[in-house]
Image 1: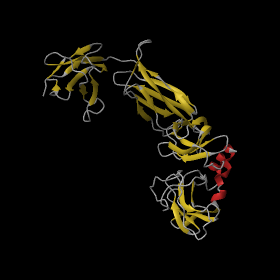
Image 2: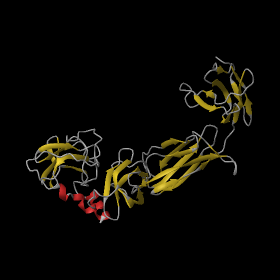
Image 3: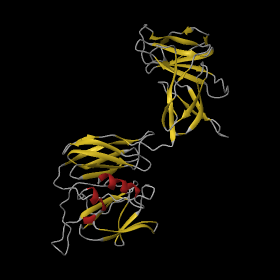
Image 4: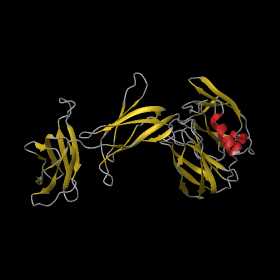
Length: 408
């Protein structure tokens, strides 16, 4: 029953209506755009004055509205019986206060005066009934976490926590994929997540009555494209090292007027192309200053494609040394910079590499193209240091430059 209803939640043309039965705290004013009081779940004992003293206490009516694509209907005005009663939030969720369970209302969603959706609703017979009517006697807890797919966070995903008695709690993820269900039924249960163009995520959960539990969910995106990433490495087997700031390019094969896509490795030598890559053959290349170029031809498949590179240094040297104070004591965590004009653009910004000294004051620049470099060093509390003469770098050897910093 849960799966069938949850699928209808995403596929039903025009609207998703997941409605809670719990009363809402608040003053009785309609919710306004930007308010955080959405899908509230705390009980209220406030009586609403009525001519009929036997009438039930007014409750809140909450849910969410989306279009036929599953995208939220944001900032729509909601009318009950032609009276403005609230607004939808950015994620399409809404709360309407002071409705009576047994009354029947005409609900309309309007934007700029245009009626986008209309229906007849009765809070006592809400469309969420198929998921189970939350029993106010059931002890409840909080379930929160993040929903993500192969690319990143999944916003506007519907998350449901339910148990064997079909009591449930619902929420929608925000832009960071975060959800928080504060009225999840206590005890063993399941947590489900749904989003357009994604498969269903379903995980067991143990809800602690009066407590909270974190449950992160992986919601696989139905990809018709691939994700490409990997490492750029160097060195012999057993002594492999990552190459930071290496350049990786990718271009589809057999596609006219295509432009190469470029990315760079991080300090751990890891790279990834942020956008999905079309299925089919692609040409990839990796290189870095002082290294050769390695070319790869790969067939991109749906999902993750791991493509690693191993590049070799070509005719390079290095610079290393130790940073100490005037008494010869090592200075850790000092910033050392190696500066060289940009070989591709002599009039542009210089090419700069930097390293921080170890706890013993040592620094090392590997794989440096031969040439004349500037060298400087900085550390808070010490005077800046600059090399008086250019530092030469030769093939297959290290130039040793020890640095002494003076206290300010």
